[in-house]
Length: 300
Image (cartoon, rainbow, N blue to C red; front, side, top):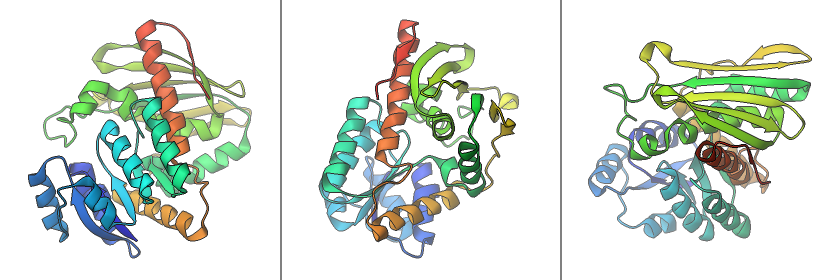
């Protein structure tokens, strides 16, 4: 399958492009980026042309892989899906429910396959844990801590404008929700508050009565970096494994799964754009809850 890559940053180069080049059934046919010089450099690195126009690259491919800020991604995804191109997108799907709805409408309207890349969901040990834990049932609550430290010297993500503006809620919050939702069910209500150092704390109510807490930051002291997921319930206590696969290896699994959807003609992937939209709805509700200091209902 011919893939067009949209994006030129570290994640695009070291995860998306690397996985596409290595995949036996994927062909990287071109790169587009908002900075033409960076697009040309990345394209040269992988031996493909750089495209000046979004629609020209869409026309040249069968599927798009997008590694761009969420608001830019949403517009490209709508254009690609409307043109009948399959979607391999990054998290979060968009920065508003309205934009996420536009992507879902475009994808369902043309019947293209879609996969949203929540990294852990494509790491075998994490995916196996989620499947087994969801099947066991009886979980009352979960506690999540995701403390990253991306603003230290040398971080490839430290100068990312959208991460600085929207913070941990929108950058690593999707990773937390991608684990919680398949185990505890849909989030129906959200409360949120801020803490020091860019911290945001969420209290989530789930449809079947479970609750969960999530604490996130992108600006933790380096000695406080942590990633912990703990589930409590009738079966006892379960801790999510860390996931040993590299991001490029995990992205290769995402390519496999998109191709499987296309081959089978199915459109029911567990992390498709509809799931991506569900995650955006929770994040948007949490953003409102932070601003208003109240509990917000999450629309279905």
